[in-house]
Length: 165
Image (cartoon, rainbow, N blue to C red; front, side):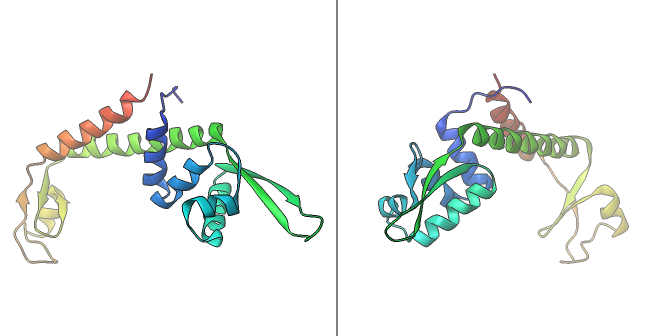
């Protein structure tokens, strides 16, 4: 895996895209270790929701906690902190997988003849098998001009590659 230049904005964007935007405020709150009830209070969220999100992040190894028992009440409290090294590893793996998928899609778009109707896109073989008529919507398959798609894929690939040093 190559080294990447990941800023905080990129990390938060990838977390939002990969596991959900609801996790971003939780990660932002963990710039320093905090108790789950404090995070809930600061975000004006129910503590149970915050704990669920923290546990999801913990299952992905992106946060950790220290558990302490209150001697008077017998209740446990959890001090949460993010695992920066694991977050970076997660982001890199996600972006590598995305880059591989984008490159695969680009290869298909550049090398295959693609046909489309209003409901689907198909290869030349599939279009021929159906006599160039879509079996779902009954429209004629026309050759797709995919120059915009290719440009978009190349731009996304370039964007991810720009993160690599």
